[in-house]
Length: 212
Image (tube, rainbow, N blue to C red):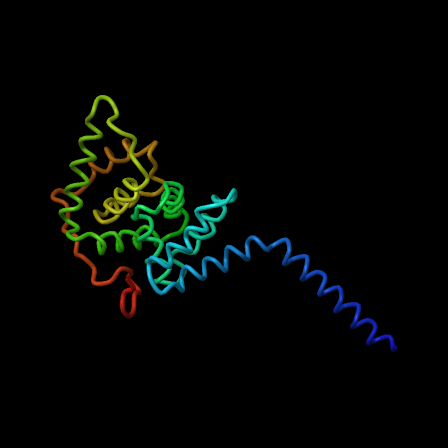
């Protein structure tokens, strides 16, 4: 065997070995990426929920959820619809909602995208905002905490802050800081609140029929 073919063979073996090692080390991340792709390509919301359930389980659930939600708002409106709808469904865990909510503070445009979906999902956005604000005012005025505010309620407030032109109070809003943020928003909010138009589609860049 001549020298050049031997060198090429050795290089090929080294490259194959390196690829195998990389695949083994990255197998969990590759699995998460493949599962996320399946969520985005699901034909229906129930099918997407089955895929999301995998991210909600396992000892590495937090890492799974972070990687799943990091793909929200990156170019697949169907994937975005499924995750946004899941955040408001009974199937969602508070861990999912927390990760989803906090993601808005890391990437520009996500909060506006969430508010767009939120107003589309509401049957009557203006009436829904009134109901949420009445309930939040009651919680804020109570001398003793009536109940711990949930991450689902945090997501509602984030959408309202964005829709009323006060997005700065929405970024990294949490059950620990909501009261101060809410009071600051209330002091600076426009009066009366601007009407919210219900969008025709769940996402600003949506095209085609909406899956069930």
